[in-house]
Length: 70
Image 1 (tube, rainbow, N blue to C red):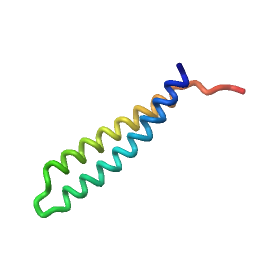
Image 2: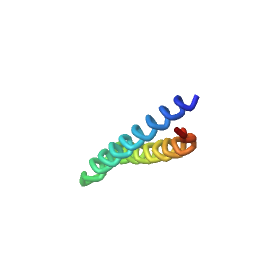
Image 3: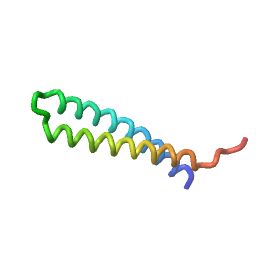
């Protein structure tokens, strides 16, 4: 079970960081127009917030896994 939790935490952390970065890019594209594009701004914000939450959850999950002693 610990292997599964470890794998899920790694995936959440990695995908969360990518989603937040992509959200920042999309948000920047939406804001760059003279009249900001509502769809791009909203999508970017949702991706940034969702990515940040997924990253934090992944990091917290990885810290909950007990380390093996050799």
